[in-house]
Amino acid sequence: MIVIDAGSGIRALGGSLVREFGAEPISLSVLITHTHWDHIQGFPFFAPAFGKNNRIRVIGPQSEPDGLMGVFEKQMDGSRCFPVTLGMMSAQISFEHLDKNQGLQFEIGEVKVTSCPTNHPGGCLAYRFETPAGGIAFLSDHETGGDDELRILEFIKDAKILIADAQYDASEMVARKGWGHGCTDDVVALALRAGTEQLYLFHHDPTHDDAFIDAMVEHAKGLVRQSGALLKVQAAAEGCEISI
Image (cartoon, rainbow, N blue to C red; front, side):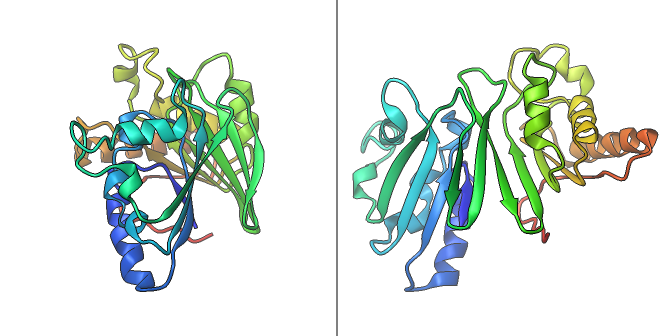
């Protein structure tokens, strides 16, 4: 099993895994894109991390000066930030570093994984997974239109599924340049150039309600219709399951 990031959603995932596996051991890998709070703050509530027979590999970019493990330890200091320390988690938890400034290839079981740096303050990694049914690209926290766009385009090229940060619409993006997040128009254009089949918009802004996100999706679909392409677009949603 591969989990991407450990935001608040990982709490519900943990409960689901405990119900599914019961007393059987759980083994999984958590790929961290970067260690900003919204991508790690759910880990203290991840129930499988408290099961002594479970094994969790946390893989992500080196975080200076404390390393990946140090960042997780600080948010679980036992007093000021959280009452339980990382060391009190009973599972076998290991931390492995990737270089956040260059793409790397590695394997998790039989899945070939490639990482790629994105355009985000402090650094961030995108991940791509090669499956028998096609590639899946997870492009988190990436501001489109930067000097590295050709590299990103090559990274996501021909992916069957692209899950991409499209946090802002075009009007919002004017005042948010340099924040390290995507614009819906640019993300659709990127997906069309890359020849992806399905685009899932995510990294939803907390100020956007469902109606706003629905409008963003409809706008994105309109851009696809104008292009004449067959790209399918929808918003990523909690509990969404995709079969490929």
